Amino acid sequence: MRNIKHSIMKTAIHHTILGALLLLASGTAFAQIDFYESFAGTTNTWLTQDFETTDAAVCGTDFSFRANPTNVQDTPISVETVSPMVGISDGEPVVLNYNYKLLAYADDLPIQPLNRADWGLVSLSYGPTINGPWTQVDAITPLNHFPTQECTAREVTFTPTRGTEVYLRFRAEPGIAQGVNYFVYLDDVSALQEFTSGPIYTQPVVEVYPNPVTDFLNLSYSGILSDIMVFDRQGQQVPRQDIIVNGNSLDMSGLAFGEYTLKLKIDDKVESVEITKK
Image 1 (cartoon, one colour):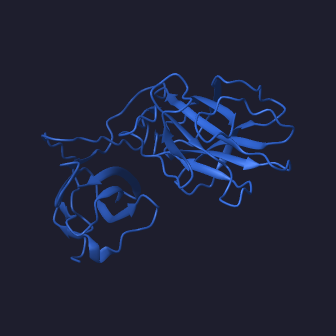
Image 2 (cartoon, one colour):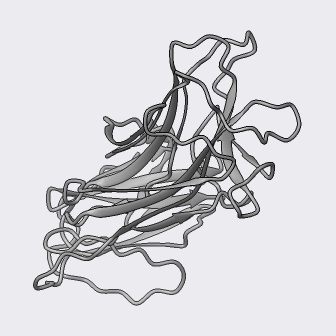
Image 3 (cartoon, helix red, strand yellow):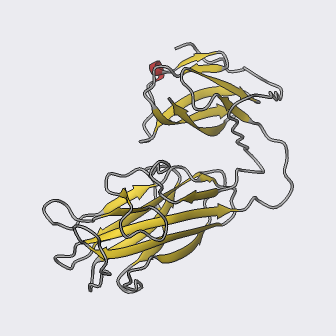
């Protein structure tokens, strides 16, 4: 891999490009969080080995996301799913809304509300990476859950640290009651954060194109670039020999298809860009 030159650009450069454009500001203003997920079959990119998209007993839309917190030995287990990055915090409160439902397990169409003394805990948390660390912002227990066939709307507010990426984790954990077998549903997740009030100044900009990319990813930025890193959806850094830096472009042809996070260290600040390799 060719060495990265440490003094690539020292003055502001603004390029007009065709194709996908991603602006990431560092400093006074950060991108607003404005996220919605309905779990439609082709748009769902939440990470999980436990949840799956279903059209059975949904929350009023065509699809919902559900899991059965029981393994093949009928033993209660914890299940969870993690969202894609919902945005970068501008330091203002995030208003998070979602629907959930708990139904007793059935082989075909579950219709009976879960009504047991201690079925466990359902929680929603946020964190700066797909691996956390997680901060819990909502908890549903047998004490505050009302058994119903319908989905229940929840709303919580939290304030992530300014400039950090935000991911969501939805998790169900078993209680001490024996023989509890149920479905937990998640649907209609939205997160909204307003822009920081006050003056907005011109900030260094990162532009990448084309995105999705098949081979060469072009970079445009202002400032001094000192490092480039690529991470896969599991948060693992891609070996440097798998990406080739060629001036202001990256040769991505050696990467497998999928979603990646490109991190650029510019003027001692790290800018993150979500990219798709096709």
